[in-house]
Image (cartoon, rainbow, N blue to C red; front, side, top):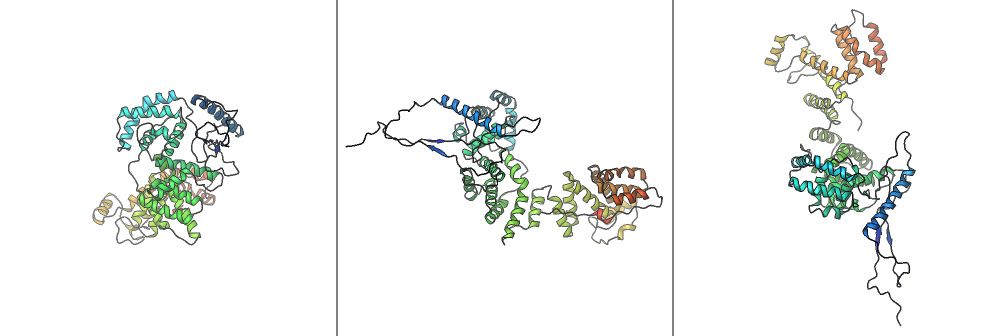
Length: 496
């Protein structure tokens, strides 16, 4: 005798991924969420259910999801506290892996109108920045139009990208070239391309997840995205993935492995004159903090008795010379000064000053002033003796003679350079440069012009004792200002 069995030939167990909704900026959660959405499993039955309902159409299921999605969003918004006078930020749904879980929320018609107007320019930009992407303007416009329409009608998925009849990497390059006002389109594009396996998109999603984990003070869990990043880093040696994977390892306190990965990453990258479209966002996320991350990681490894492949000075040189990082140019200049290379100091500090670094402007002015006082060698002066050149003649003929026969610029030229850089530094609000400039003009008999520069340090309350001394002696005809040595510093290292 056998038991009654269902007429169904197959017993199916359907998995329904349950989307996790969370605000993009929320960091108040007290516990770490699971790395993957938990599946809801429908159990087996040997008898037909009396409550069984016919399967609904896709449109009906989508309407129900929209209804649920809206309620969830409203509930999350209700828990947020808006600043006085500002509207509450709209909450966006993300999974626990940092994947955007909604459709683009703007107006599709406006995005399509923008594409019609700006699309040809975007295509021309791609031809310049990504010449490997060989597509015609008509193909570009068609793919981008279908991409935008899909973003506003479907949830992020790999299939949404693959059905566009191009490689996912090509779709990604086209998509990131579109500067739509609706930022949720970029969220949708990044999530969909990450699910399709595009390396830059995977790295961006991983960075989003790392920020969320850091905000909740939890170590990064093993997620699908981070596993793909690890594979790309270890197997394919993908530079972007290697940089992100080193951050993951560091967040898990695996400092030695993170240091090894970051050392390997630095051997694969080279400064590029031309920035490509598809990696620009990632470069903005990784490169600005790369050197600080390396030095912080180096300190952690040193605490455990290990060391990094690069020394501190070698890293500073790499950042300043190869990558022309404005933050590290002054540091490299100071390293060169310690080694006695005044030419490299001048060049690096000048590059830093040209980026608007007011500290570099002042140090460069000090360098030129001390050179004009024969305390530092002039460029090309192989027989330098401190103070020996102070008695040289001045004037146009003397300057021409110095350049033509001695091969060095006259001291007066360095003095004029010092004045120019002090002027620029003072205009940028450097109080010490303003004081030096006031003293130099007072010494040259231009008391009225020098007095105007004293207004900057007075407002900044800079070195009150020195200011009082200068003001009391200012109208004395025998007063010859002496610049304090502490104002003529050529160094001032940041602690890294």
